[in-house]
Image (tube, rainbow, N blue to C red):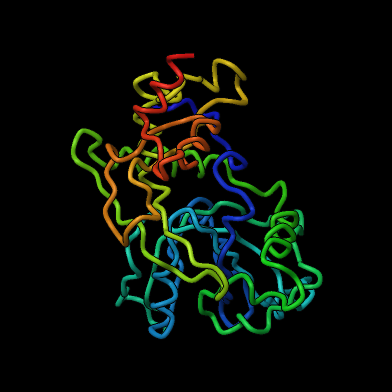
Length: 299
């Protein structure tokens, strides 16, 4: 197993917060997803009309859960921000026919952060509106404000959850999901699908899962260093550099459409070499790992 120094700040950042969803328990008479069994993972429920949005969220993308509690003794009736969660895998929501309510479709999520009820830290947000995403679907985080930028919304929510991160769960996700796969067999993940972000920006979707597996495999072999210049972050910076490295697609993912990516298609590089790999040469082409390594070896 990997050294468990991995923590929430290393694995997630405010820009990973892309979604928001309203949840409710017994018509607001109790807190949703606060049972003992929901400390680390739980099945997030959806109605039939909410399945499509539920399946849009990828592992590593965070969903903010909020709920209106107005019938709990000693609790002011208002909207509370309670969880940050992420899907544990790429499985789509499945129907649980044993449930008696309308929200029978479930998708398992891991708890990244959770507001404490004991300390009454409900992290109520100021200057954010929860009217538009109030119908239970997974919605873009941008709906929380017409006046704030996406980054401002993300930073505001992140600040409110400060100190509420569940480090043990994050470590389990980063390690155990890789353990479930046969790392000696050919592994591929679907990447490169065009997607519109908040109606303004289009990016090529990348898979954080295969990148984590690539890093994990290198760490197990003791060679988590830049494949171009051999720089080792952990050796140079100490514990702050533990597990740090960037991942480069040997075939630029911006070229072409949706495709499957294998471990062999990735290279682990330092930030400097990564930037050089994405700068065009005089002939308009990019350096490969091998050609850039050759230039470095001559110096």
